[in-house]
Length: 283
Image (tube, rainbow, N blue to C red; front, top):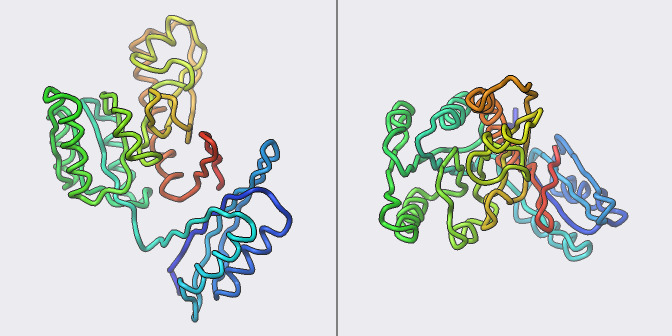
């Protein structure tokens, strides 16, 4: 049985004939479509498509790319082809809080996250033992050196370990605009609040003082606007007015775990389409 798989993603202005062009390209290249999902955002007349397909005998990647380039020229497509045999390499950045780190490592160990995790980086030594338990190298960087020097150390580690994507698993440092621009749309953060409300520090405290009836968490791309990057995944839990701030925090941890992993899955499975600063999740 052939277990080889590719995923094709396509974004372009909406126009008649797009699906026929994409599927004909795959079929004529000796590809067998396994799954196809598409969406047209009628408000902006944009087309998004995600296709999983298996190569059959005679399939040649370069021939497929050549045919897709012809489609791209005709329809104004932006497209990407992902080979599932090549896993993304994801670095985890953490501080002192362990619940998100544990959740990501456990889900990865269970095979639920299609990536490699070659390194854990932290601004504190507290979580070193967890990384060691999972046989992952752990490095501590020193923010006291100053933000520029500290981020230079992080960038050197990301380069050394050939990292493709960065996960901020409760990394409690604000990244510089220069850093986020360098890794644009490749830094996934978990914010312990339901954005765009309650951004910044202590969102559970903010929520409690506002008397909210739900609390949530948000997985999003980190950019130079604090907690305002494109949203990938969110979830909430209902609460009542007898709960304390400490209870908010405890309940919120469960939501954070789920939301971060679900956000990472959508990134690693190529479900995320970005257009003009917002996400479209196509599954």
